[in-house]
Length: 285
Image (cartoon, rainbow, N blue to C red):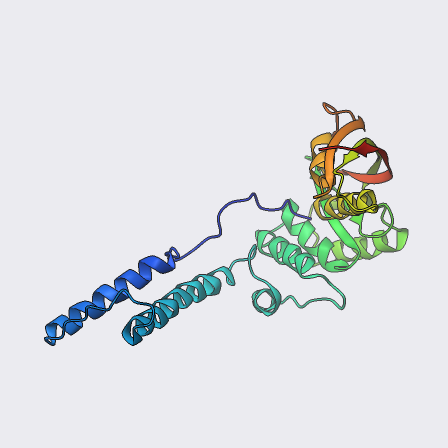
């Protein structure tokens, strides 16, 4: 699983102007045309004026055109393409969605396919490991040595992430095919090391928060964790606090992990979320 993009502005081909800027330009254009024809348009500022409404319609069309242009451009980018647009990108690289595969998982496979074109590199083996079972391979870690040994760690989407023997055998067969395995490489497929972390925090709610707010906070934490987890991803208290801060949560005090603590994960390790204990401490503004 790849790290999510930072919160950068959306990429554009043409910057989307404000509607007022487009309307002012259309009105100035129309006033010039009418003046050239010898007509004095002195009601241009009235919303009830028919020509003013025509200019508004034209300006709105200008805005829709720029928006459509930018949407079309973003659809060609892996990180922003959705639905049929991303599937079309994947088809150019001979990838098709597996039955039940989420669009973000297809995006991950497409990214690895592109990165794995250069021969027997880490990304090369990642590409074929992901392709071995798109639904069950959550992430792949590859390390090598000078003697041609290649260790491939598999994080599974099932359970707490420990890959089953069946899945390991499936990936091993895929990586040892003659057209995949490097001439001097020796591939070993192993399950990723799983480090279970438990979460406990004291929570204060706002007076108007519903009674199930703590459950909503826990559900959001588990959802955010599932989306962010990957091999080598460090688990921090800051992540927990950000995920638990729903609209009804007033204050959070971390107990485990403590506010300045974190769980470090090596490239072949992944964190699994264990128990989540949220202690209700009252309500306050």
